[in-house]
Amino acid sequence: MFDYLHARSSPLRECCGDGRRDGCQRPFSGLRCGATVERQWPHENGSDFVTKLSGDVGDDDAVIVVVEGPSAAGKTTWCRPHLPAFVSEYIPTGSEPDGTDPVAQAAYWVSVNSGRWDQALTLERETGLAGCDSDPLKLHYSWCLSRIGSAPWARFEHELAQVRQAFADEALGLADLVLVSVPTVETLRRQRDADPTRQRRSFELHIRLGEHLHAWYETLDALDPGRVIWSLPPGGLPATRPAPRPRRSDVALLDALAASLPSE
Image (cartoon, rainbow, N blue to C red):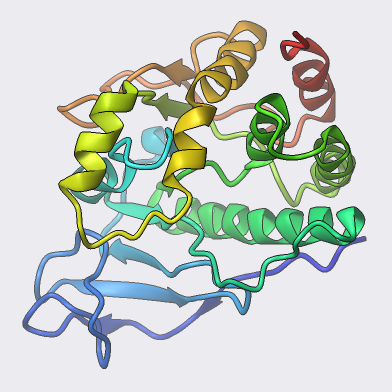
């Protein structure tokens, strides 16, 4: 079994007066000044913190929601006002495996993604509604890279094998609802230029993945309809949402997804 990472929680603390967390110059993710928050510290591998407003969400809202799209699609911008809690996207550290050892590379990313999934489950237990800024099941990334020729197909195969084991161990799973936005390249460039606070070093690569990202979730939606929304609704989450999946770590559904993906 892989050594899946788990988040470490600190005690409750107050947001400082200017909306930033104690001793840090980075703003909270969409928190109001003075709000009581629970902060979960980063993983050693660079996975960002989780924040949430205090207060409960009704049992009927007990779902995990993923917000997906290419770089500069507006995922974080949407999450901040519309989700009471969300797992921040992974922040690269510069020390990620380079692919020389594809098995080790796959194990690294499955560990990162399992850690984010664990954070989502924790938030769901605590608040009833867990949001994720990008999908903890990031298997689509290696598949998309292989589709544009930027990574060998073997990278996806190794990662799929380890993700499958993580599903069997219930250390990873599929979200209950996915909001997907794949804007035009022109829109992505405009939104990137409007946010100089983000470096987006791999932006040119990521904008090439959009059509394949769409194909991934289109395939998932065909296998299990009603759990993908093709926009980031300006009014927030829809009032009517699908119930939690009966089996989020469904190996059979993962196998069907991998078998049904476009091959040409």
